[in-house]
Length: 515
Image 1 (tube, rainbow, N blue to C red):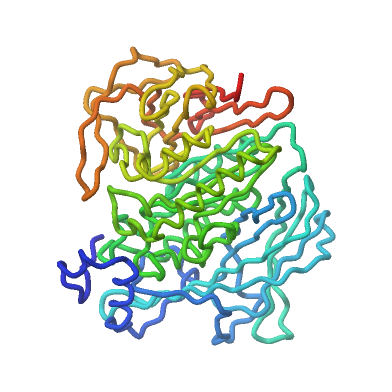
Image 2 (image 1 turned 135 degrees about the vertical axis):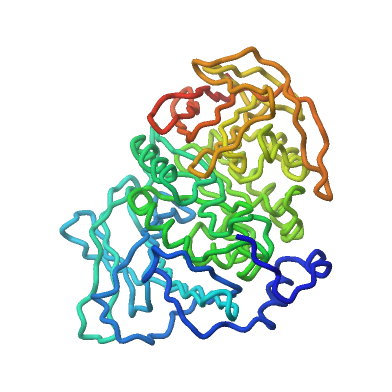
């Protein structure tokens, strides 16, 4: 649903950054008086409005007993050290007292208690148009864990009345990263949303028993337009439905998200990321953990992972173009240099939303190419994972913008010599896209002749430039996700597969360094 820019003249709005739009609206919009508490009516479809954020505990304004306030939407994320740190997050439909996690190595003995932080997200309404929405997200930083250990946990809180019984959810579990795993599996996709297909993606990846999951942005689609403007249709409570949908998998599989264009929720400060900061507790080692919560890094086993926010460099959707003032790209270079110098890191995987190389609807973003590809080449990144285009598409190994080595289905590549394979894994659940007219799907069991593809890339000013590309190797227009098996030892490798919801393999290839 499109909503007008209340009070911002179109010519003025076109010149304003997202933060400036937020401040303009914050001082001018009047909230309607009716208060709707998020989560209590999570099945509805009310529309949210303009907001800031608060991370202090919400005031206890209700007499509801703590035992009557059920937690929901549990989701995990690693801290900066997956061997010893886990962040446990969940939501409650109204304010609570003294939230906590109880944790232990046996499900019948959750002896350790860790207090949780309340991040209260307030979405003011617009008189006669949108109701007020209040959301309460809770996060517990669980540190000092033992590597390679299964932990059981329950989340809970006390009521307004200190004598009221605490409420604890059903016990769930997670496993910390081993100190030196010989093998592990992770999964990845982007562009999920709330739908039967989104739920099916969760069930499909859970069958792969991943150590963690990478989400390449466009997480929930509460912002339906994805242009980063206050005129975007927006329903804050779509997040309640999303977190409920994903609880069965995210309560046990760390859910490592980054930021897509639909995650720029212009009603929240700063730069539209106040909502993401409130809802997720991600590693805090990026260039600005609060202002850019989807930018961070972590190492699991012999693989270093780097999450980036491509809204900062996108020519296609420029609402946040340049918001970091170059700090993100400078941080990226420092992080890649650090990972390449680490003796225990064999591979570097980078994931973000917008595609440097794709031929589907959004095609390729020249801003990503200009800002980051030189760094990827210089530090020999091994694999790049994107979303944005709701398809599966995989390149050959690309070096300096050209095919460095053909990588057919079942092939292998060496990034030190051949270049980088870029994977678009945007089939996570949102409505699917197609490829340009006349371009056929080409995937395992359905390989067609490898022809050049007529496509385009975005240039500055939201223009596009036609290009004929040779690098588009594998294409598939069904729902799918990525499964990657990382192996260590004398011959480390990444075994990359793309799978459909039914487990059918769409594509597979291997990455080996110096082989």
